Length: 367
Ligand SMILES: Cc1cc2nc3c(=O)[nH]c(=O)nc-3n(C[C@H](O)[C@H](O)[C@H](O)COP(=O)(O)OP(=O)(O)OC[C@H]3O[C@@H](n4cnc5c(N)ncnc54)[C@H](O)[C@@H]3O)c2cc1C
Image (cartoon, rainbow, N blue to C red; front, side, top):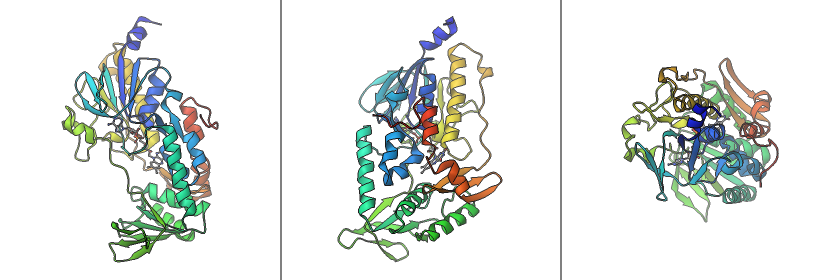
């Protein structure tokens, strides 16, 4: 090992958040520095497989991955970060973790169980709930609601599915054409979609199993799923020295080199950043690669002016799965729906490829 590399290997890198961006960085950087990963759960989960896992829990055995399976050479702290100073991170369980370099990757914060076993049990319970229901209400018509409706409609064509969405169109983060085609697809699968209405969840009656909407409609459903999005994982930063680095949406403002504005040794990557582009996992991984390059440069005493810069993606490109066979794709040249985009995403939901990126067998379920 060269002297500069030896020096880097002794540098303490703390990564907060073990989602798509943070896990990828921890995996790639674990042999280059003294890495600590902080996450409230023992596992990394491939987010775009979670709707399938609710109808078919077997996929979760591959999409819920213990951090220790890919992060073998570093310290793992299972807790949430609650404060950060110029030299340390404080966690909810009272640990103080010193750092030389810090990367914040707390994208979205969802309340999920701590252990993989508990998470798999949760998916089993959700799947049983879906199995035993004849009618299901889905609240929210963003990517989560649409993907869940697609999974249930494809696997259980006889179940009555109702979707209520407060916006005037589904999937409003992509184009109108994609929304229209998705609505048409859902209707063709007999999903009843109600736009510009909200469900009053206080009105739920367990006996009658009815729900009231803001439009005065009554919906009968054996169970419901709330798919209204998860909050950004930046609330904890509001009481820290980085509070002034948050924009009005609660996103961390970063420079082109992905360093948090005004900070020398703190980077941010993934959905938590204010990078002006669509929020996607594959872009979060690209952020991780740029941050890794810059960390390596700084740790080996390189010149700051040589830091790599991240170019935001200008294309609005996204593929939303619609069950196991179809998908709707918003691509730079247009919108397509059906088997072609489905072939890219919906079969395995890119789980095999993501596992490979994490250095794992694509098709083998972990213990
Ligand atoms: C239904 C759905 C489908 C999607 N499909 C695709 C797709 O097909 N392709 C694609 O590229 N993207 C897709 N995305 C988007 C993608 O999932 C996100 O862009 C990606 O997860 C962002 O990664 P991240 O690491 O920034 O954040 P996250 O993956 O949200 O990870 C954040 C991590 O930080 C942790 N955390 C939060 N707060 C704290 C704290 N205080 N201390 C410590 N840890 C903390 C969380 O527990 C979590 O592990 C989809 C998203 C959804 C919801």
